[in-house]
Length: 400
Image (tube, rainbow, N blue to C red; front, side):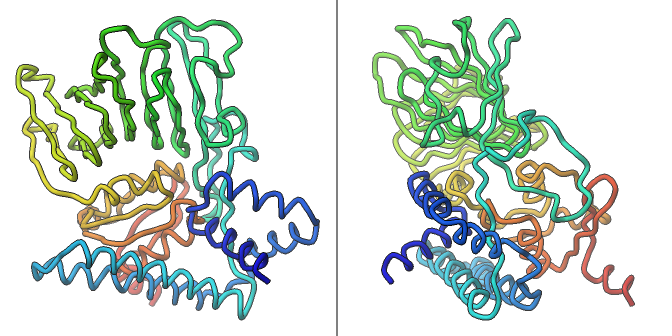
């Protein structure tokens, strides 16, 4: 009985995208041990067997604490404890919904992709025929040297912990000094640099770095969203460059979000100490404290500081999308990068609607949009080019 509970726990962690590599291997061993196990698990993945009522109820209950939290924020009563309550309530709602699904009818279980079942061409993008064709991302990247030689990487090459040690990777010949690792839309990847610094790259992100760091400094350049756990080495300071700023790292963990199509660059310090200087004024240096975020506005070239919850900012690295007072346009950009689709707003004013909530990163896309539909008064319709976001009132008048 205890073992059955343990397997149930592993399946649940796979649903919410929080399963560790070792737990995933254990679950795969259980699936491979008996064909009946595999058939049972596959039956749990059949969306037709889960009623719309259960999905709807889980979405509504799941977002209620987010609405309560939004009300408290507006009334000036926000606290870290409130945020934890919201997260705990959201997790409880997931457990209740999954339990109800298992009790009444086999539920929907979302498979955590390891990259093994993906097309080896990571840039292949077929036109989706329906909502269910939007698939969550997986570990994949391309590493290129300065001569243009490229090698496609996936979970197979990245090792058991989802990381890859460089330069001893899949490249057969010695690479020139400068390397570029690019993660496409619908992808994510982790690498470990030669100094043992760990780097996580979100979808549509790149890092440029030397095969071996010099004796006086360590310097890399990034675009997109990248999380760093920098190995401390006082004799060789670590620098991270974007097109508008340079971050000096003193041995720490932090997140940089620097997408070219977004209005600002966000630098969030989780632990340790960092400073940043703007490319326009390199002589100035701004130091960040733990839990602070520097927002560099691309239009005014000004930096604003704010206190944030690093767990929210880096939630993408832990298998969740967490939104706190974020406009729908920002949310859709994140989802479109991860599920690799195009979208447009039928009414531009919808893009500025503010949302709060949390969505499992590895969930199927239908679940993700149902959460948004049930908490924000919006609807999604399929178009030949992707998705169109319309207001729920427009949808109701059209249907009537």
